Length: 410
Image (tube, rainbow, N blue to C red; front, side, top):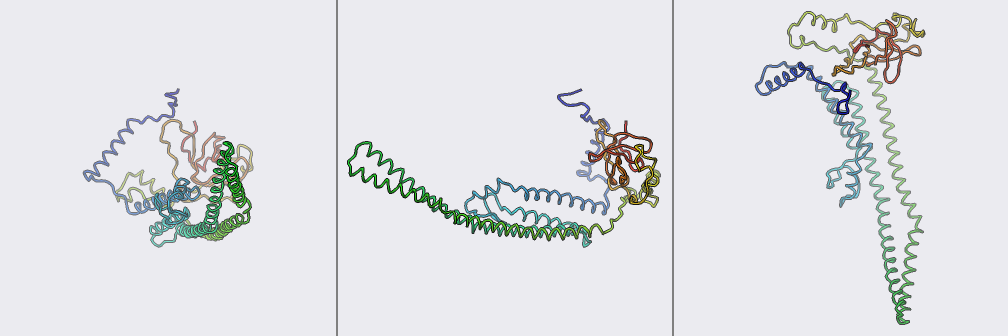
């Protein structure tokens, strides 16, 4: 059924309980802000984690914006700068009617260096390969900006200015001679048509002839000046070659340093993280069931993923995975999944899906590989031990005990 061109199944109507909850939240916020009502204070560790997360989010958004400006410079602003009086070049700190217009590489480098500084301040001296990598990238971007500035100066000095001077002089001569030719032609034709005296006609014809020859000479000078024009192009090409060669050297060094940092970060063991329970934060006891769940998630009785040697059953498609081995299959992680299952906010149009509890590597065609925490769309259940699902456009089967069903199949 459609309603005003839309599908009623896609319209989310909040429940009465949801509306009451929103009113309760608003009442608590107003009471805390206006009347200083008592509220739960989050611990320092949570606040620090929140600050680190916000720093990452803000920094990534800023870098994304500046990277887009670097790849797609604002043509309107740059065109505006070129038309402003007194502005003859693009560069860092050039002031025009639209403000200071930095080179895109410079802006991106400053954003990276700023992000690196914030991360190092949050870590308080602890090693952070990402912060170091951002600082290295920022420094390289500064070098690229310097190369760009030098290139712009060279192009201005060795190409644009000589070309502009040459064009202004030659074009001025051509315009003057052609304008004079047009006027003397009209004067000659007029006297000839009205039957002026012979001496006047001869004088007008002489001047017309002089202008005619002068206009030809001035235009020929432009056409025959290829050597100078090629020299200007060679100067432009030389400036661009020096610029791009310098950029290649800078970027090659940058890639080597970042690859080294990437390997260094990969070698550093990932610290196990277990979130604190609400009871641990507040120091108050809770219900037995809640404490049991908390202890189970933080204690030593963590369940590991099923090994391929204890695969649930032979593959229903007859693949070799019916008798898999442990060899070549990494053990599932002992830590809790890094990403929580996706939550569906609307009670309608729920798509059957599952969340991967452990890594699964396909050993035969028809099987579906995935990583811990991946969300898999369930298509059907082949038997009590195997699902068929889809992830990233790929369809295949996988063991039931490697995933947690979030939205069951109908």
